[in-house]
Image 1 (cartoon, rainbow, N blue to C red):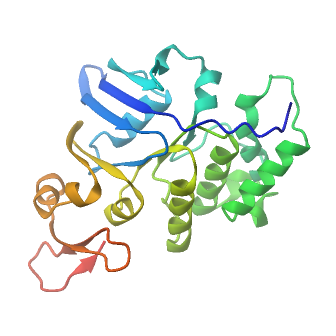
Image 2 (image 1 turned 135 degrees about the horizontal axis):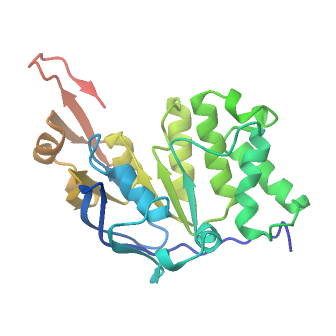
Amino acid sequence: MTGKREVAPPVELAVEGVRYQIDGHPLLHGIDLTARPGETVGVVGPNGSGKTTLLRCVYGALRPTAGRVLLDGADAGALTVKDRARRVAVVPQDASGTLGLTVREVVAMGRSPHKRFWEQDGPGDARRVAEALETVGAGPFAARRFEELSGGERQRALVARALVQDPGLLALDEPTNHLDIRYQLEILALVRALPATGLLVLHDLNLAAAYCDRLYVLSGGRVAASGPPHEVLTEELLAEVYGVRTRIEVHPDTGAPNIVYLPLDGNSRTTAG
């Protein structure tokens, strides 16, 4: 029945030997990645390392040149668009198909995979949309047109759209982009608290360390390292992959690695990332 909550169980994700190339130029070189049901996995790496390309292969915007993506053991490439959308919700860096729509209408699009094409939104759908809007702090601007929003407001609306989709796997491409610090922390805490499996592309290594169970570090379209943050984020690895000098400490409150970036010019002042 329309509006009935259909929370999908968390998905087990397996990326096996995924390659992707454009005009003979390889962007991914045989990536292997796993995310266990309910786990929050981060994908980090410098610009151009293949993070977004990998995420797009996972949620189906790109078809891998070789290899495969498995969702609970099923080849994602063999699923219909609607079947895949019932399992995987996406928070992209930009949103298409939203011109002229209000924020509330954009968020309500997340219910589409659970409906027949002629079905209208029911009271349960409207309630779910309202709850998601309030959860991400987007309630006050729900009636505004999506294209009129700031970058941070758009990001919160897209997270709300993904929430009402009730995914088993939530794939997020830079979900903290454009957000102020409070909403960065709230969105990542929300994602981590969801029953869904989370796959996050992040630039901020300290946020990745604090909110992800495991990390995959990409460099040049390959996995340079993977594992728990405290094992992966080392001063040697960051020097090799990012070309920066760091000092890595243990955060006194969270116990997660805390990275302090050292100036490139040798100046004694330090800045936390």
